Image (tube, rainbow, N blue to C red):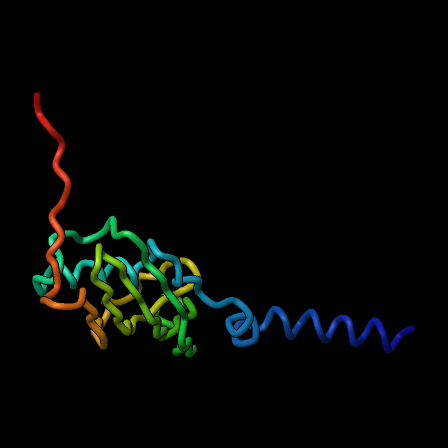
Length: 138
């Protein structure tokens, strides 16, 4: 019985250790409305491939890698994350790889490097630029 109690205490101490706890809790930044996907959409507009910077037909995000970084000056555990972001905008499909730093509390601990690796447009022409819908004034 004494051995079980000792093992339980040792396990509890290990789980509370910052390095061990950081490995267990990783940021969840692979949502369609999280920092990497939003910034990929903003870059589409910045490079002139879309008139929108959000509100796309479909956004898919996949976490490819998440590596722990040293704690920052505030003691937060940071992670360098790499995501694959696929944005469907009308007949156009854009695939990007994003790289950014995140914490469990915040996906935007750094800027986002966006690398467009694939731009698929409808057959027989160039990418169709979408136009934002405007409210009618009557």
